[in-house]
Image 1 (tube, rainbow, N blue to C red):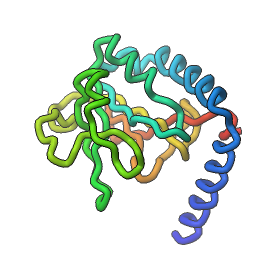
Image 2 (cartoon, helix red, strand yellow):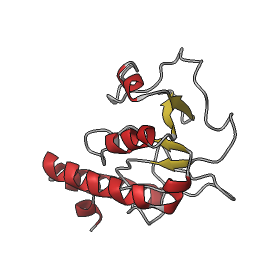
Image 3 (tube, one colour):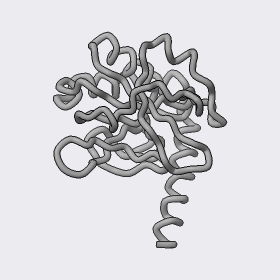
Image 4 (cartoon, helix red, strand yellow):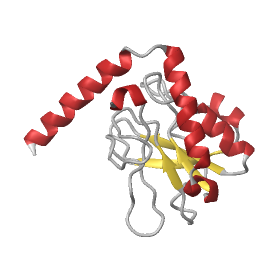
Length: 172
C-alpha cells in the first residue's frame, strides 16, 4: 500500500509539472475538444441528470459543459465537500447565474455553502446520473480511473464506474 501511495504521489507531481507547461490558450483549446467529445457521447446524450466538478485553473475547463447542460435541459449537480472530511454531496445547481452566488472554497472553487441546506442532493432524489470530473490526475475520456479526493462515478447499472477527463498533452 505504501508503494502505491508513493507511486500516486509521483504521478501527481509529474502531471502537475506537465500541466504547468501548457499555455492558457492550449488548455482552453483542449478543453473545448474534450467538451465536444462529451456532447457526442451516447451516455451524456441520454442523461437527464449530470454531476460535474467546477474546474480549477490547472484542470480541463468545465464551463462549456455546464452551459451545454442548461441549454440542453439537463439537471446539473455540483460537489459540496467539507474541508475536514472526505464526504462529498452532489447538490443541484439551479442556473448558470447560480454559480456566481456560491462562496469560494480554500481551493478557489465555487460550491454551495455549509449552511446551504435547501438544494436537492443527487443521490437522495433518485434516478441515475452521469458524473464527469474535470480531473487533474486522470486518464482520457474513454479510460476509467479514480481521482482523489473526488472519485468520478457513473452510478448507472451496477457499481459506480469512474469517468474522467485529462489534457491530451499530459496523458501522452
